[in-house]
Image 1 (cartoon, one colour):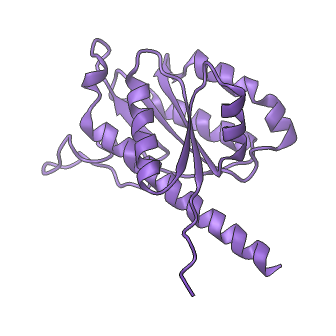
Image 2 (spheres, rainbow, N blue to C red):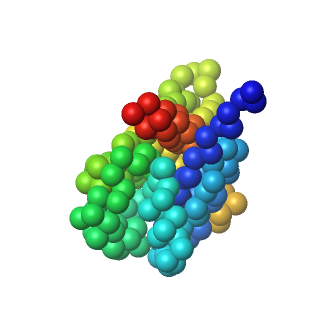
Length: 203
């Protein structure tokens, strides 16, 4: 007998990007998820098509992304979050995995508020939160700004880009950290999906 095919999870990346920096991170999350074996639905939340809504509804995991503006997620992302209220009422996203990423001009920029909002939003949808899963980088004399998780976030991927910099100034370590998040979510989604299939087959 041949070995069973590995589970190929469905991951959605739902993001808003005001000036393109967060879109660079979203692409990195997508790349990481695809490299880990996921099929990815890529969603700019300011213009969600019917097909993309279906992709979100059928995903095993959704990764939320937004810039941090004025200490929280952007208005564009909040509009999307409010548009999901019907899905919340129906429990369509219950038990999916969720994760998040954000960018601001300051190294702190109160990005934790945005990640906490994503986690609360996911909890309201009865989703299961996936943390970044990395130790903090760049926190000792021998460490480097090129370390993964150079800004030391746990709840999700945090990035910093100069407010007067173009999309080419998104830090390489932050891009790599976003790729790590995408891969981690895809691997966890595959494990959960395989476990659910095994349990269903045993019933």
